[in-house]
Image (cartoon, rainbow, N blue to C red; front, side, top):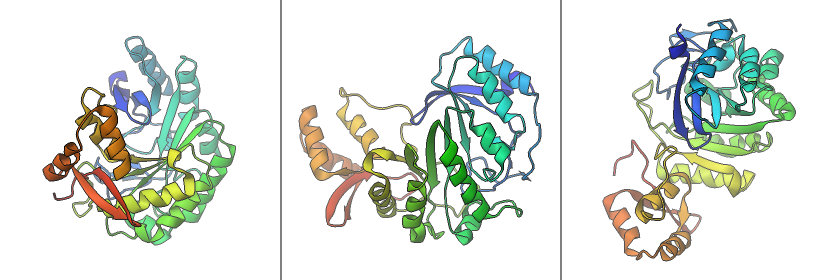
Length: 315
């Protein structure tokens, strides 16, 4: 594979800033075949680590790209599971020598392996997937390789979290009607025990692998958000809803800025009113956004909230 195909970007990311992507795994080679995957069904469902590409070629491709661009992170985010790459630790270490921070986005399925944990320990930032802690839900949502056991995966996640010295994020992708909402409190409690810097709740925003996959309702998403805040604290929970990734409005455009805020942070009515007052905008803007269908009004535990209308939900 040419160096050109091994790296891509930079792309804007709300979590990582300006990120240069590393594609260190062949297309759709993964330990999971998630029903929501925007890349389609996994073509090569595997669990064995191997060397896919020349690791020196990967490092060289990153080096050449960094001559022309400045980035906040070089991120291993391939078309499959990055920890399947037997050379991952070497690649992370060598890229760090180029004077740039390294991040890895992993589904965490191989963290029960000590060699994988050791490789990831070299990164500055690791984001781990925690979609379910119930085996039935896990098999429905993530469709793992038959050899994997959820109990081992979760123990591996906890072991990694205890020893990792860098920044640890978690991501939980919510899908409608697969049982996740029944265990949302347990998922939040598990993530709390990992002491993550930030826990993200995501929804499918692009065409998924399976046509039946839909995002949760706004009410369900708000409930999950509030449960996570209760367990982890408001400053450690974020939403990934597919809006304006890495592109946020400015005070010169209060309407767009308000929509950007609501896409990641459901706002109480009092918060909206204070924002509008500070921006010198009349309260009529709130009603206009409701009428246009850009936002929705929700009631949760007696309080009034406003959030961005989710992609894939009817207005």
